[in-house]
Image 1: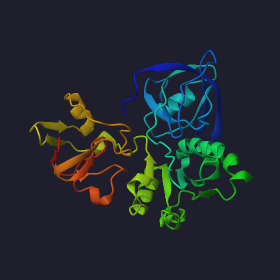
Image 2: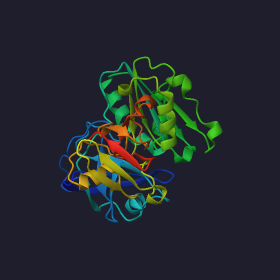
Image 3: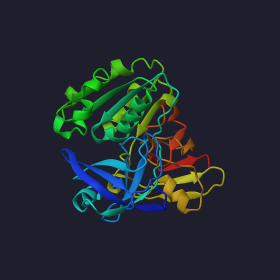
Image 4: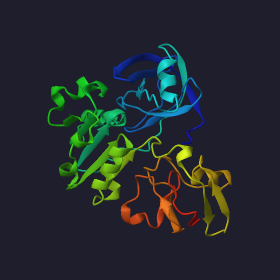
Length: 319
């Protein structure tokens, strides 16, 4: 995802492990001055020591203006960003970040909120819950899933008496047969808005169970999990119906990236297939959908060009 190129330097003023393989970072300006404001659900771009840019959700109270707090899971099989940030930094170090950005915004209108968090997906939801508690805005219910208690960030916090009746905690030990049954929770929308962040499998299951909900009431946050490894992709062609231009999409680039490189200006935001901004009409061809934004009935004639690819040799887009 393309983050803002403007960055600021912040100091790591606190760094500690808060669960197995999860490290909390408190970030402040070097002179202790105020930081740019953020809203519940926002994230930062963080330049990690190995030079890569990574996105991490802010998990502290949005009313705090003197610090940002992120919690980072060390992904041992990932691309090295989280390992670099956790292993190669210390308290007192300065790192570069981009301004907060929000593709997972907490909407103020619904009668209530349902939050579903899997593992490190708790981070943006924690900021949302903190905000709701502070403003006493609307009722909410949190369903928080991890494999084991040891892998649960903020375990003591969400197990506290003040969350009794508002939080359901479930550990499945990594056994799909022991997964929590969400259907009774999602069967009737009842005017709620749903926010879900976690592993791709959890989010796809939630999407499947909310097909009868209004698409405006279901929100997902996904930091690029839909982008498969290049070796798992196949190349294909894209033709623009209005101009007749044809482009080859290689295994290591998205449709959006290829069209941008060709000078096309196209709307986008999250670039992880969750916000719906890059929704594009599909004229012909069979898409390989990797998004969480489209309802099943939309998929025959619509594609999210930031993450989805092709099953057929060519796609024709209404561009």
